[in-house]
Image (cartoon, rainbow, N blue to C red; front, side, top):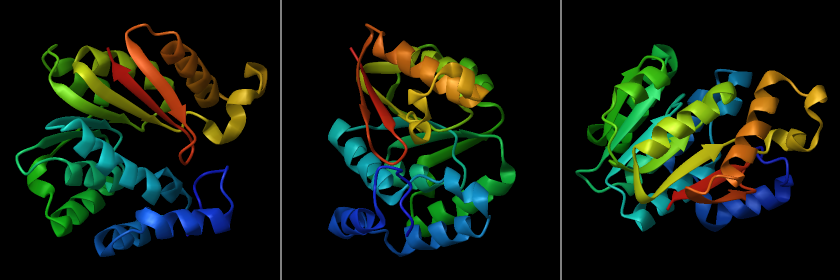
Length: 219
């Protein structure tokens, strides 16, 4: 399996997967089905990310989670596995085609009863939710230009000690380049990283996991 992280060699990636992050049969089938979509399959989170999400969900004792950007459902599958049987995960996406793959995978994994899927722009879904501190965990992996807007809507609805995870915050290392050399998505990621680093409402860290994952804990 080709590593998603630009920081990992193939050999280190293989070692990492063999020591705690090897996909099971359901996950492997989902990886293969997603790979058949072509280059767009790069949007899928890595197995080590998925394993981290499951463990973190359990460590937080999360019961209510939300995801912005579901694609073919690997991250949602992993988060849902970390939730208790009566836990709930709200998934926000705009693609019926991609999430149809997700639905089949969730059913095979036996976690579909924990997941609700909203097919419409995520900001519409978020802004329609009560402005109450209801969620324990949030994950963002969608259009980069809207990262700051998603973050603000989610933070307002996250309980104290709840966590927001945000993917692709290293953007292949391009965050080190000047803005004049970057496209709109990369500039948005850099601005988002600066926003979170300066935000006194959270404790945050960027982990060099896959393409970079921000972990922000609400104070």
